[in-house]
Length: 343
Image 1 (cartoon, rainbow, N blue to C red):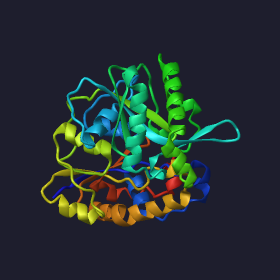
Image 2 (image 1 turned 90 degrees about the vertical axis):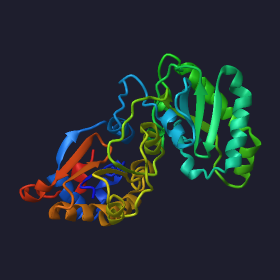
Image 3 (image 1 turned 90 degrees about the horizontal axis):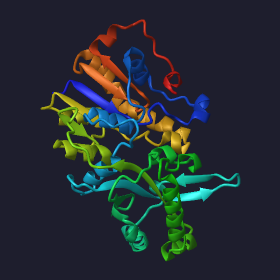
Image 4 (image 1 turned 180 degrees about the horizontal axis):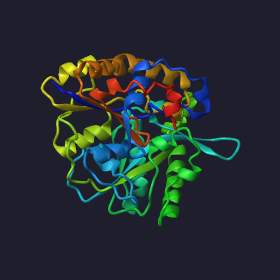
């Protein structure tokens, strides 16, 4: 029976910053865990943390090669010399103050046939430039390049709901790539598919967001005996490391049953991943309450009774929180409201 549990919960402590004073989640178990944990520094984002957990080093001046790895989860192959960029379909909307704001594919409901049509149009236009676009699933698209494009990018998760102007690609070839993205926007804007979407009151697929570029790395190793996640980056890292990955349990009790033959496990919970970007504090409240009921309360109980020897909580905010059985004796560490732990 697994007695050590790593729980990665992106966005757990990242509720909409302009609404935090109105948030009142009821999560006494989570507050107890955070109060009695030893806090250490960690990579600043959930994706960077996953690379570290799987033993992959990312240079400070490079993008984490998320594209090549998530492509493994979507059926691609490792071992190629190709340079891959995620080029995800997005909707861009200009506002009256001159900003351009991004909505990701979660709001676009892209059909496979729609993805195929836009990808084909892109490849007809840009294949001679050495660019080749693939869409193995409607919401995740991949751009194959012959070499490093000479740009550094921002992850899609950092751009959702924000003005993209300061987040566009940077680096030696930034001007060329910004021009290319504008040309792709013009191509998609005039495509009959988008004209039909507009006529039916659906948001258009009028841009691409490049991020996560690089070659597929080697040398990954699984951080735990059991891996449980839906996240494509985790599934790709599992494939890269040669580890099995299981479906995500609904509740902590389901995990304990599934982990009966394991020593330790990594579970990735997605409920709060987009809370800050979506600006929906009520939904964040509800998701934290759900995680409290299904995960944090059982974990506190198991730490108190000795069924769990260590819980490593990773909110993806630049810190990790480690709670051991000894935490139950730290009576002087009183639980504080979750807002105290937010950045």
